[in-house]
Structures are given as structure tokens and as C-alpha cells.
Image 1 (cartoon, rainbow, N blue to C red):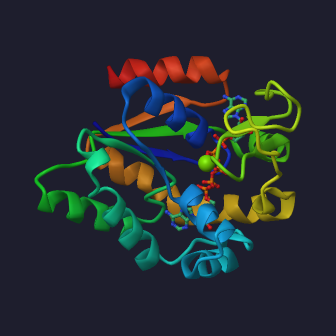
Image 2 (cartoon, helix red, strand yellow):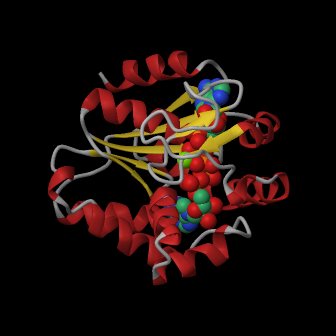
Length: 213
Ligand code: AP5
Ligand code: MG
């Protein structure tokens, strides 16, 4: 089962992708998490990605596509995967389609988590992320058991550098101009499913499961 998560920054792609991954036993591949891990480890890729991410801009397509095409060729992806935050541009989607065609496969589901812009800024300012495992919490909607500490690995939670309101607005602009056209792209492929992402996390998840099962 090969799944693409679509949706604006903060729509809940990561939250839902993690729940799908746990339920269906397939890996969640988040390009944002991969870039953040590289920034944390101060790799060349991390240094390159950071200069774009801090401005709310996209990392260049070639860098991102090579990374994902390599990642989905790994053994743990044999039964499928959830792409969270990729593709994000039409050229990325085309590169993915081409890479899959070579192995005779295709994306089975594109799940678009729909949340209007005015909800997003509030979600982002309340989000707290684990710099170690990438797990996300929210100060109101998904509190960690212990204030400010990741439930999974005990690390201190942080506000992501790109979650400050000015950068969030820039990311939303980039989403509308470069990523939203993917909704049409996957509709034309007959695999698009739109889900109302403004409801509670478990309700959103139940709707997604109904699509996948
Ligand atoms: P990335 O990390 O992918 O960020 P994003 O797309 O902006 O999405 P977010 O991770 O911010 O939001 P999300 O939809 O995962 O929401 P979440 O589940 O956390 O990318 C970051 C940057 O990396 C990009 O700007 C770009 O520079 C670069 N990049 C990444 N991929 C790239 C690519 N393919 N090409 C080029 N550049 C790339 O939820 C948000 C908050 O809301 C959380 O606090 C959560 O707890 C809460 N929440 C979730 N669901 C609900 C709900 N139903 N009700 C209430 N609260 C909820
Ligand atoms: Mg995310």
C-alpha cells in the first residue's frame, strides 16, 4: 500500500501518517523529518536544506527527489509506505510516478487532509516537536504526559524554527502556489481522497482508515 499525504503545513499530515504507520505496519517517510535530522547532525544535506527551510521555502526538487527515490528502494518499503510531505511540486510528483513506473507500480492512495488557513497559524504556534524522534504534540490538542517532554524518548520538546507566524504565512503561500496543484494531479490519477482535517485527530483517522481498508 503506497500512500501520499497531501495538505497544508500543519494540516496534520505527520500526525495521521504516524497513526497509519502504526496501524498498517508500513514506514512513514517524512522529508521534513529527514531534513531536520540532517540539520541536527550538521550534514552537508542539512546545511543546504536549512537555508531554504528557515525562510519557509522548498528545498530544490532534485535534492528531494533523489533522497526519496533512494529511500523507497529500501527493504522496509517492500510492503508499502506513507510519504508525508512529498511530493510537494508537480515535478516531484512526476519524478515519483516515473520512478514507480520503472518497477511496475503506482501510488494507491493520495489522502488530502483539508484544513483552512485560519486554523493553521493557531495549530502551529501550539505545536511542540521532539527533535529526536520527530513526534509532534500540541499544547492544547495533544498534550504530552509530562509537560514539555516527549512521551517516546524523553527528550525536551521544542517549537520548530519554521513555526513562527511569519514563516508559517510564507509556507502557506508556497503551499498554495506550488503544492496545491497536486490535488488535481492525483484526482486525475483516480486516487485522491479528501478528508476534513478540522475535526478531532481520532475522527480524522477513522475516516482515513475507512478509505484504506
Ligand atoms: P514539513 O516538516 O513537511 O512541514 P509541513 O508540510 O509544513 O508540515 P508540518 O510538518 O508543519 O505539518 P503537518 O501537516 O505534518 O502537521 P502535524 O501533524 O505536525 O516540511 C518542513 C520544510 O521542509 C518545508 O517548509 C520545506 O522547506 C522542507 N521540505 C519538506 N519536504 C519537502 C519537499 N518534498 N520538497 C521541498 N522541500 C521540502 O500537526 C500540526 C499541529 O497540529 C501539531 O501540533 C498537532 O498535534 C496538531 N494537530 C494535528 N491534527 C490535529 C487535529 N485534528 N486537531 C487539532 N490539532 C491537530
Ligand atoms: Mg509534518
